[in-house]
Image (tube, rainbow, N blue to C red):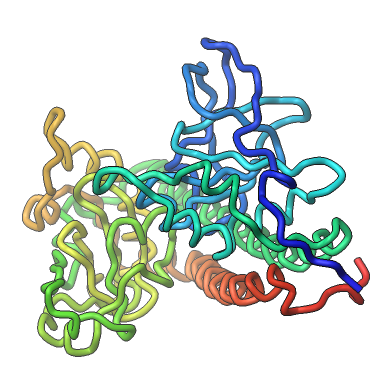
Length: 398
């Protein structure tokens, strides 16, 4: 029989463990922007001089302590360091390290990710509006149910297997997108299939020439709760980060809210481009959606490849980002300016041939993204049941 004990977190987990990293030392840094919402794995980091911030090792869990990053699921398990290597990150992280012999590092990650810790952390926040932070003392003193080490490992193994599959799908998608970009570069930048010369029947036009319509989104009144619901995805810039397809959004419109602005509706395979702040993000729409006013979207002309337009916009990302800023001032690249950006337009026959080659890659990407969505839902439904002992794993063999 498994014995669960309510114990202070600090008995099993070291909070913000001390590590040595001298200022000016080159080290791997995990910035807040590198963490994906509710995602275990860290896929990006930078190597830079240490000048301050929390320090950690592989196997540690890092959790954002500031609003809205914590609420948005900025929690991850460090996995990018070598043995005995020390990395660092934002001062706005809390670092959790499993104490050897009594706590499993994977279990600690899922405990921190779970509502058991997250909800308490969010409720403990203090400070001015928009800059509220978790009180570390509250986390250290909170009591949570801990099973013995063997049960911790069994619980972690179940959840880890799900996250491992999510990671595999994400890596496959990254590889597929890199293949698509390489083919695009070969065809439309290096012009390798065309003797490295732009064919005479291609045109230099504008984004407007690719589009049936260019749509700048709009936010329905947030004072009208009936405009929001669960029916129509409402895309904002945070939904686009690291996403080839947008398969889920933070907010949804009701059918009523969407019906009030029908000209803002985007069909599947429209191409969204962020045009303010983090300008130059590009994503494809996976179903009928609407966006806010910070996003311009291209509805491709009939028979024009949405994948050509998506990959083309990726190559223009830096240009769009620069146009979305004016010196130190952030400006919104409006629909008219966006639509006038110059682009290369191949013949329809070339675009269709390209689409035949490339579309299977994007269909697989979408399939994997949708599967990951289901896996995340499964993990999140199991998480509280496993970590409360509601689901008994004592008879499961590792």
